[in-house]
Amino acid sequence: MFRRAILILFLLSFSFLPFKPASAQESGPIYIVQPGDILSLIAERFNVSLTNLMQANNITDPNQIYAGQQLIIPGLEGISGVIQTQVINFGDSFRGLLRRTQAPELLFRKLNRVISPGQFYVGRDMILPSGDNGQKLNARVSPHAGESLFEVAVRQNTDTWTLASINSLNGSWDGLPGDTLFATGENSDATASGLPSAFISAEIRDLPVKQGGTGEIKVKTIPGVTLGGILVDHPLHFFSMEDETQVALQGVHALLDPGVYPLQIEATLPDHSRQSFEQMVLIVSGNFQKETLTVPSEYIDPAVTGPEDEQVLSMVSRATDSRLWQDQFQLPVGLPYCMKDWFGIRRSFNGSDFNYFHAGVDYGVCSADHPFDIYAAANGTVIFAGPLTVRGNATFIDHGWGIYTAYYHQKEIYVTTGQQVQAGELIGQIGDTGRVTGPHLHWELWVNGVQVNPLDWLDQPYP
Image (spheres, rainbow, N blue to C red):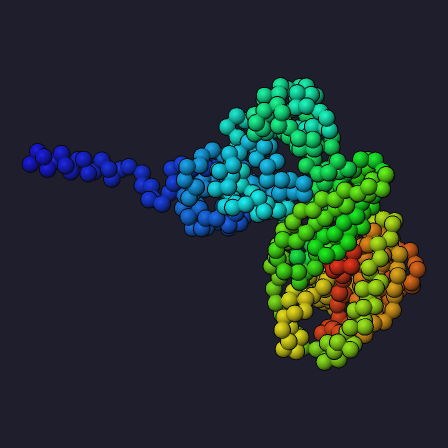
């Protein structure tokens, strides 16, 4: 009887202990949620299921996460501490990232499932463990021709062996001219970028680049350098900004298959010698939806659409030297506005395959008193104002640097070819001319011969 009482008391004592799900993880690497993060994308980034990630952190609603929140990442056995992610940019290298972060190579490969440095490309999200020593190795240094590692160390206010240890060199004799090394402190060598000597720095904005997006490539060079290059298969046009910085803007076609594509930049120096650098760039899906439309057959007849497409492409393929716009673009319609269709929608016409896409955004007329006015989205020069078969009454405006906006299906056009217009200036009226299913403005934005999502240019300034 006494033993039974003891057993009952023993069992009752456990009934008051807090319950923990078996799937909840007590410890593991921590990821700190960043602004704009979504739990499903975090799970995808670390290659864990959303369910397991929620269970490991006792999360019941995946929408209730916040910037700064610490998440345990399950399934990464043998890894502890804080882990972070970094998008690889132009000029970054596999060896350089290991040097700068001091991440053990085997651990780095395990976290990112990297088999070879060939999987290291611009736009890829890499997982990085935090260094145990807490050093921030932001300073880039590079041995010049004939310069010893000792001289580099003196220039960086450090010692040879520390510099060799940080950068996994065999000794003071192992530094090669042009190699990018990392150290504590500030940069002492402005040209140590992992790029050829003509380049001081190079970067691509808003990585990874998406279908229908605008690639902005900004390069700082030594004085007197002329730049050219290619993104995917389009030649880049670079324009001067300030402080020896040049920028190229290039659209990425909405139908381009997601994958990795080449970005090459070529520098011509004052002595006419050339240097080039190429790296693969990740292009990701724009996650576009599909829709089916029925239109008169003559509007999808290649004999009709082909010549008009060629005419339009010839108008928007020239990159003029003067930048005419300032800041971000403005809405081309009055308030309140009414969206009818979005950029990039895959389209089937009259039962065809979904090999068409919506190359702009549509602003409709949603009530009897809805405004019909159309406005210039930015300063520019009108290069065409007249009727087209498919696009109806159309206006094209050149904003410089290969940037054009187009306004289709107008009832009336208020501008003429050659006219200078200002942002917000009245240029026409919404109509239903050309291939339409109702009155609306179809607004397009071209970046060096490629249509891009114009809403990006309403959200932020380029460059």
